[in-house]
Each structure stands twice: as structure tokens, then as C-alpha cells.
Image (cartoon, rainbow, N blue to C red):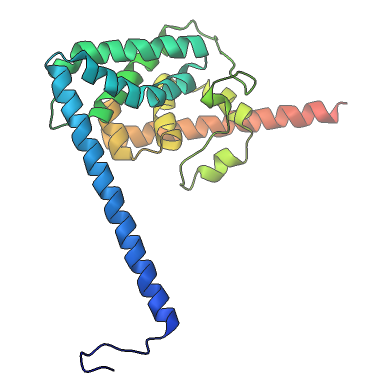
Length: 233
């Protein structure tokens, strides 16, 4: 040890661990800095939009249109209807942004508009109408592999094909389906979902668990039919 109290012959393993810790802390700091900068920029766009600045609102649209379109597509399962619904969501947001509270989170407010709009469209569909969205449609992210959030139920979705899960989702009530979509495919917390759907936490959890039970029953019936068909060949 030197006279300054610094250990000259520190083990290489300890040095590497210290470097990893410092690198991790630096990466975390950079991520937080970028997140804060993005939040500040978004807040400035929202405030300007409330003053009637259409350019600032257009920047909000460019930032969030992909996420809102993907949610609409998963809920409505039709590319044209999802595109139309996305336009309507942003039109509703533009008309109502003057009532948005600046102390709230813009993404939560926007997702609430999208969730309400999509569930309203689903309720207006005639009973028994089920649309099919498969992977053959070009330019549709919902046609790609479903990515469920990392949680105990993830294996439940992973064991089934994307097409089978999408078909089973059709049988959920709109209120159940939006919770399943936000939880597993938008990777939101229960608290975030409760704010979006404007329901108590207990209600959100109840809708999710009842929705999962329906999905399991539907998927089990589908598997039984497939086995029966295969056995009859």
C-alpha cells in the first residue's frame, strides 16, 4: 500500500468488478438524463399545443402514433380500422388537450383516449363478428411475433402459437381485452393500467384474471379440436 493509502496490487477480479459497477452506474445515469430530457421536451410540446401550436402537437403525434396504432391494431385486428381509429384518437387528443393537466403524464392520458375509443368500437360490432389478422399482411406489427411481458403468465402465451392466441383474444369482453393487451403486450404495471382505464386496482386485476381464465378455456378447447381432427385422419 502506498503512503496515500491506495492499494497498488489490487486483484484483477476486484478491479473488473469495480469497473463493471462504475460502467453500470454511468449507463444508468445517462439513461436517466436522456429520459428526463425527453420528458422535458414532451412537456414543452404539450404546453405549446395547449396554446394552439399545431407544429408542437404534430411532434407529439410523430412520437406516439406507432404505439397508438399498434394498440389499435391489436384491439381491432383490422389494418384499415386501426389506421382510422389512430387518426380519430389524435383528433380527440387535439380537441381535448386544453383540458390536459400539465402535472399528469401525457402518455397515460393518450392511452386512455385510445383504450376508450377502441373498446367503444368493439362494443358497436354485431355479436359474433370476429376479424382475422394473420402474419401474411404486410406492414402490420401485430402480425409479427407476440411479445408478452416478463411475468409468471408469460409461459402461458409462449406455449401457444401467435395465431391461436389472437383468435382466443377475440372472445374476451372489451374491458378484459384492453387490460390483457396493456399488461402483457404493452408491458404496463397494474397501477398504470388502472389510471388508463380509470378503474380501481382490484377491478383491473379481476378483469385480467377472468380474461386469462377465458383464454385458457378457449385455448384448451382449440387444442382438443385439433387433436380430434388429427386422430380422425
